Amino acid sequence: MMTTPVHVIVGAGQAGAHAAVAMRDAGFAGRIVLIGDEPHHPYERPPLSKEFLTADAEPPATWFHAADRYAERDIEFLLALPVAAIDPAAHRVTLGNGQTLPYDRLLLTTGSRARHLAIPGGEDFLYLRTLDDARRIRARLTPGLRLVCIGAGVIGLEIASSAQQRGCEVTVVEAAPGAMSRMLTPDMAAYMVRLHRARGVILHFNASIAAIVGNNVICTDGPVVSTDSVIAGIGVIRNTELAAAAGIAIDNGIVVDEFGRTNVPDVFAAGDVAAFWHPLLASASAPGILAACAETTASRSAG
Image 1 (cartoon, one colour):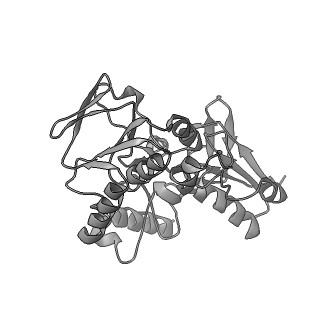
Image 2 (cartoon, helix red, strand yellow):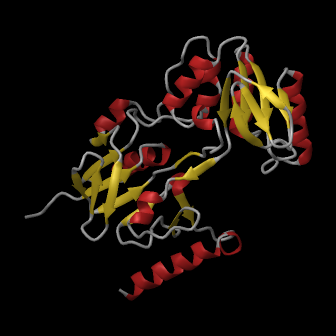
């Protein structure tokens, strides 16, 4: 008896959503199951720190695809249901509710999560990564609110700008000597600082957060800043734990070759979580990735 092949995608973000549609459009006739730990269909994240926070009324989420586009392609969703484990030998995943789902091919698009700052008093910090995060932040941004944004990277400055437009009193605290120093030239970074300060945002550099005491942000090197709320935008962490527990190679991300293949047969990865092979950059920036991919390709060729 012939069985219908099953392709499972773990992670209902940008990479997972587009992969599911692309599989069907490329002619795959089997079952496609897209699993996400959020309750929402896949949506765009960039607007969450901009229009979503500044609009007078909460705007709708920006979906990658309309619901009927998934339905037309017979793409199944399992939402608000994390994957607890992967069993590569048995070709199955275990869901958070204990159920198991077999797969013929598995694509990991688990993305990344906001990096948290573990300091005394930091338990109530807000972070922006998900639609629900954005809703919590939006509800907090009321005129006159004293807001501290930790981190002068893209997310920190975008939230600061959005909060200032909502009438908040905004202070940005950054441990580095300048804003967006890892992605902008010094001239561009200086321009960004002037732009924010001209709009009333206070920026403190070379200031590391030590603790939150009452309504005060205490810096190891810098001022004490009074605040009503704190939002931290200090980068992300790739969600590699599920893959690592299944024996999939990790090197600052899930190691994949130029075809998205991991070192485990029939398991692929894509999107933010993948440390992908690049013909120009791999050997210089991530030699471990190149070596793992070469070993994987050699073993498959030998088999």
